[in-house]
Length: 424
Image (tube, rainbow, N blue to C red; front, side, top):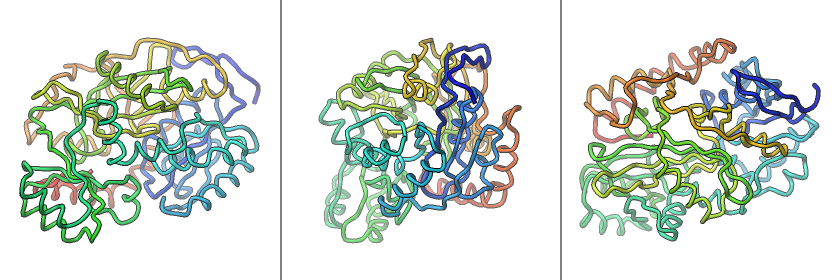
């Protein structure tokens, strides 16, 4: 395949090592993941060989023309870690050369962090990080504790240990409140709630809590009213000194389910204050690697409150690219292969649209009358999550897998939202 070569993609030249492949690492069954497809395209277009762990051979990622090889491996994310590591080592032997790992979920990010020695010994390349930090960041309780420790604003939260604790909370809390699963990994097994759930009354909370068992694995959180808030995102890549090699900020215009789910439509918006806040927090905790942060700006007190810290590539990362053609996945691959990461301003005003969920999100947001003040009136350019002129098969594969079960799922989420509970 040749050695390091200067590649040009959309007039953005930089040196990339085509001898070092990338591997999309994902555990659990979520075949319609546009982030993985985006990463395959991002590096594949530069001539980097791309591999991916997939649910089967008929996922959008497996259909990409930029994919060198798929490793079909049905998992739930709840397997014994040693079994997952063994599977990763088998993949390393099949690839047969150093490979950059690109995790797309918390399970993968945590597994890599907690098994760095055997994975690096097999030839995998990834940013070294404190072993327990990704698990703590992926946990709602762990993240809240880190925010308190380092003076980062976050919604007020309670962590009940029993039904009695929930009764005490319900007697004094200001409603509505938000319930979330305390640990990220429960979404693959038996979650107490189906993602982020808004609860309107004490009676509603007590009714739900009866099904949470003796030790409810939830966090009860202050509700930040959408009329007084804006949703912001930060994507970045940090080196071994926790210094940003690539940093991007943007505003979320729509999500599905509405106001609490996956990004459906977003814009790149310059926000130096938010970038500085994120960089300071990362430096304080000593994180290394790719991050995807969700924050809500609370107009009532003028603070950015950290909601989620994903210690891995975010699904909408292709929203962000600088003037040198660098996104966070390219930044990681360049850095892991010992090459400089070109600097440049982010593409302010650029838009990202996830086709299969933005239409229902648009209808829901129009019904609610909600708008995002910081969204520019017109996009400077648009990146679609699925449709790409040079790689059409993932789009049609997505449609084939999405139409029937996807429509049913969207309808169920819509009904849930209409009843006043929002799920993500």
